[in-house]
Image (cartoon, rainbow, N blue to C red; front, side, top):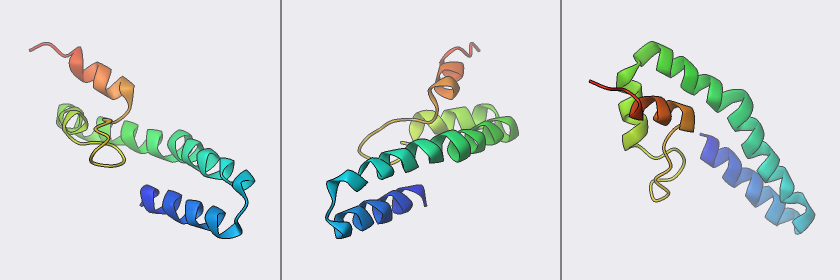
Length: 83
């Protein structure tokens, strides 16, 4: 959902033909992360705990080839867990 929103915004900027509009895509990504995604990840961590941490370590955040996991604090917490 978020990737598509960024793609639509990028397409809109390209359709305008003005490179000065591209910073808005970056701002949208930052706003999505700060106000939406981070809150969702914290809620999922509270709901699912270790299961969600494991998911974050296995699944990339945005695009499959990037391999970036969920929030660094969630991954850091997952690597600090000792069994």
